[in-house]
Length: 301
Image (cartoon, rainbow, N blue to C red; front, side, top):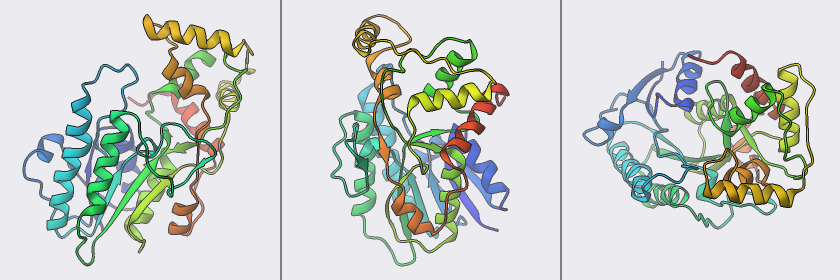
């Protein structure tokens, strides 16, 4: 039986990951943020999975220093402990935002990173620190850059979109043509399990589902889960952008950043990680989104 040390265990990904690994007889030991700031002991663990971090704050209320203190400094401390421990593998959950805030074409691991936010910059600093440390024999590190993660217990833009569909409110952004990548939390858990079990080279790996979808397609999937006919309104995109700019100034459900999140093109390649694990992902993009949509109908308590 493998023993895994996990930070961020109480978060959305953490809860799903612990449940997933338990099905394969993994024992999970949680590390709290308080322990991260003191002495961490995971000598008997086979691998360390670092999920804990300061998430991107769309409301821009966070202090910039928080990102560096949590995403960089705590990662640095944990990785230093890992290097001195008997654990063999270190898995750091970074973000595609450490590479790029916007994508022209398809995002691959070869891109020169150019994050524009404190969130992305702090994640990239943590990545750089991990890569710069001499790696003792028998140890490996994996820096995972997931795109938008969803699944049971998810709270975010997908949940907001679901509520619109549930209430019968037409989706007003159908005039925007876009394609973006998503990541089912089950596919992420599968990748993490594969990294623990297999002999895979250290490095940076993007993680995404196979198919990129338009937001209109996502609305159709959410509508299908509710047995509703999708309502798509093609309102002038210039008018919508004006409304979003108003939302930047006053408290309004739609602002510029949220609009970009819903309508941007952000396609992420998963070729490298699929070659590394030498396997197909368990769920297609649409299957994963259907599971997430159905979970909204029966929220996890």
